[in-house]
Image (cartoon, rainbow, N blue to C red; front, side):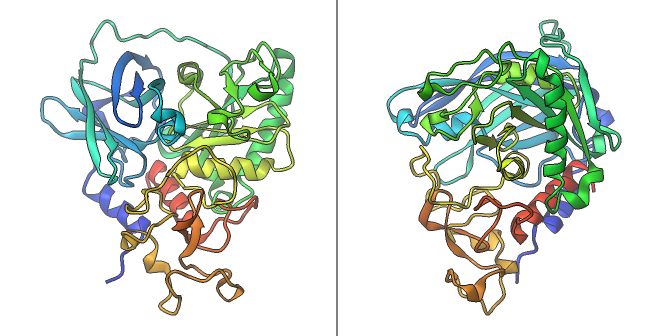
Length: 424
């Protein structure tokens, strides 16, 4: 029997896992900050701080994650009843760093954040990491009393904000907060113009264009001391608000930040689901990590592609389908386990992916010939390697610098994620 795809899975998951928000939560956010420490051989979590933030931007009905995406996940349990009341999958910069050569030589610490609705009563937070077989194993557990007087309530980095796209209440919309990076006080008007480009670019591609009314977009007017961003191998260093840098993991185009704390302090000025950093530079680059943040450079000819490609990572957990560009990763995907990303497969467990969308006349693997152009198949090459990892179609926005070109699998996954946040 063919496997029914994501939308039905999402429906069933929500049908049997509803949590009454008002029974367990207040309409604000508990933010758990921690340090992820380790190397390729071991990792552990170190407590940082807990903060109360004034808004909850996420859904109030869909509290349990049905997707099973991400290198990590966290669950929140009501301590008294033992009931699971919230969960999310996510990935981190630390997880990517673990696949680099440096992680074989030294330990490092990365600042990370988990957010969930503010609990009314004591809860237990549980954190999990995938092992080498992609199974989740426990890495941390903490009992939290929401009345603890040491939960921080101040608002660092409190800036003016704009709601540049308003389609309704946050609980049934996807709320994106755009953070300006490398825009000085005198460049805030440029940032507002770049926001227009961001909106036009995002909603220029399906399925976003058909779902424009399901998004809110916020922007924080947070100026940097200097314009631009760091370019280490050119000895360019700029004093900017969230400290982004090209050459992340020594890959020139990879434009990211390790200053997660400042980033989260800025985002907390508004209700948000997704963080997007717009960097004031004409140099090509960007990056994104699922349920962590996305980044794009503001001024280059590939801006529209950058925005939607990186949002595909950060919002829907889509994997990169290209395999010819330089990266710093080593064995990012093991070929003896199935990737968690919806648009990649190693054929280890293809039944869990898009097999139901492949016509019986399509060979598996599928030859990369014109005969199969525009058809769903299993094309070798993806996940940064030419062999052993497969993608759904010959081309897609997750493979090439194209726009309005998501394959069927990517579109389905994005749509399912939109429906989840919008409680449909």
